[in-house]
Image 1 (cartoon, rainbow, N blue to C red):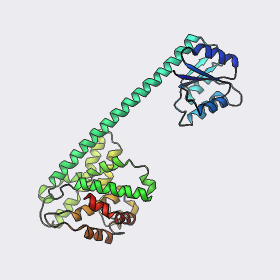
Image 2 (spheres, one colour):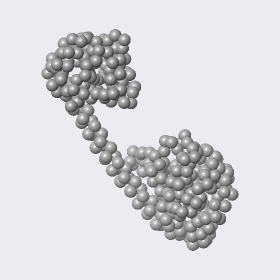
Image 3 (tube, rainbow, N blue to C red):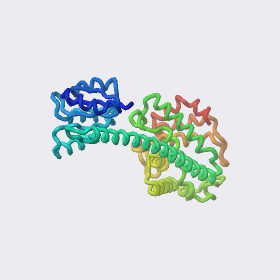
Image 4 (cartoon, rainbow, N blue to C red):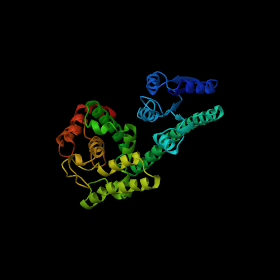
Length: 343
């Protein structure tokens, strides 16, 4: 049975309202807003009927206090008042009351108003649950589509098989370790880690614009070819920008754009395309820069053998403060065995 609080400093009004409602609801009567707040710590009502003119704390003040508390902000409040002027009604709705009933009231009108608002709350809850489910389904679909796109791009690059999957694993290990150590805690605390990791899969999407002849060349690239390869960063940003415009955007694609646009920047400013330095580079780019290089070092290519893990670690540590963020590099060194196991 739904619980309704009736709050009024008049015992006569409380009795009348209770008699009107108690056959349909569990009714609790309270002579002041202070008593309501004391009880609400133990019992959460489904709806509150409240007088406006009360001593110590009036209805308007009580409603403001309810709306400031996460536990009570959602509880519908209907004001019962003998003063039915437009200004009071407007003030009630402005503060978040769902309705305004003047006294004396008829039992049928009061029951109808209460039933309507309680039913509306149930409908809103049902719709919220459905919307959340549909949103989750859509997010799963988007993630699946993005993964397929990323894999299609990778399939064109015969020299980097499995790169996306491995860098995703390395990235998760690195972020987990940084969170555990409180490194860049202010930034990482707001991250949706699963979404972040998934969005990183699009970091090389711009390679779809690079010729197969260059992308899969077995030997050393010419200077001209290398410059062409470097354009995949800007191309990736443009592709993701187009996705954002076509889909009304979202955090997932915002993250993906940061990974695509900044993973070739270097801590000392020698990277591309913007030559940013230090923390000017978004954290996404600084993280992926390291895991991207690690994977390139330990992976076999047509033009080079795979480096042993120990050699890859030595090379990365030699680039601390040059190519890579010093704090991220130190965390990598501490968890290097996890990278070895995940490869």
